[in-house]
Image (cartoon, one colour):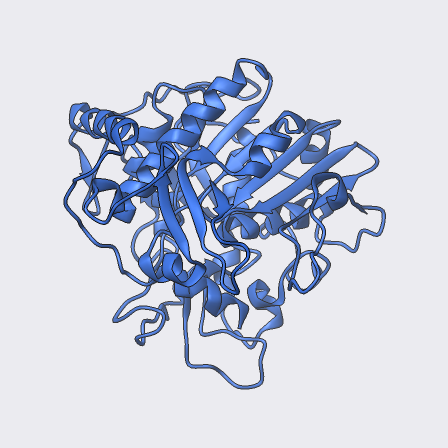
Length: 409
């Protein structure tokens, strides 16, 4: 099953290893990053210490909420939700995420919207989005959660209706299925009426992958922590809005399965290095790509770039492969409000600090919505007995991520 392959990346195999060899530049960056953490505010929520708080200023309707903390607010019931039909948006939704087409009895998770405190949210509809993005391109680059956000945006932009007028323009970005591949590396679609393009590119780590021994039956890859994925370097100047995400593939199971080897400064990272710890490695990548994008924004000042914080998992009593479940069906049973001023995804917030990259902070908001996961729902005749407490039903929580994105573009 396709989603099981995604969940395999979630096994908790993080290892802490002592520092040793000469990844000098990368270690220097990492030490600077950690020092910034120490200087930040020590407030906490749900076990996560938090960086310095952001200000919150109320703005009247019709004005830009420049100081709005969109991540601080409350889930409220809304009979106008969802924004599209999960039964009708078959053109864009993967079956494994379309819970309306599964044997599922509870759909109350669809009928809520997020209301930031003291902020006016613009009306989020497909026509409004396409008008805002006229003659522009929105790109999502990341993992399967980024793909969910992309599919959500396609459903919202089309109203969930069959849309034969939307053109497949993946070829413009090299997004074509290679011989023997299950799927292309991404998708790109253009709305001719407004010349709006929405695309997704698969990059689980946002890092450049370089084949090390392509002549062998099993190819190993250098995963360069301090180099952005090649797709970004090639097509960045084609984008007007860019949303980046990574996080759920930084574990030894995934690295070993894909034959990824850590590199920094063009050199392999030894087992004794501090960067051999995948948490530190991921943090360096976040820091590096934020700085790289910031440097590129000097040449593309109109571009808006967002780093989306990590989407929370809700496995209890085990992991995906050890009996973990997420069977709650009652919305907001753990609360409906987020009150802290900072993100609980500290590495992401620290990475964008001091750059023009914005944080699309969805972690604490989504953490309140454990009933919105796919759980044990399936479109198959027989259940596998495995729960998906990583991905979300669509329509669902990723629609809110896009609503927050729309409010900021």
